Image (tube, rainbow, N blue to C red; front, side, top):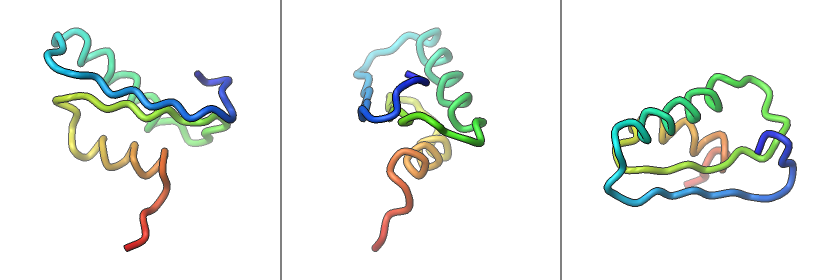
Length: 68
């Protein structure tokens, strides 16, 4: 996915998810959040149990600031 410059990718995971899978998804989200220069189209990843702060940070990266 890091070579993807144009295609929008959205991954929403249903429940139940194993703890191991949640750990892996969290590590992927952490890697995205830690990256300073996103020279690729950042995928949306959503799953039950995702930390609210990470959710908000990822949403900002993927969709940009939302105007009210």
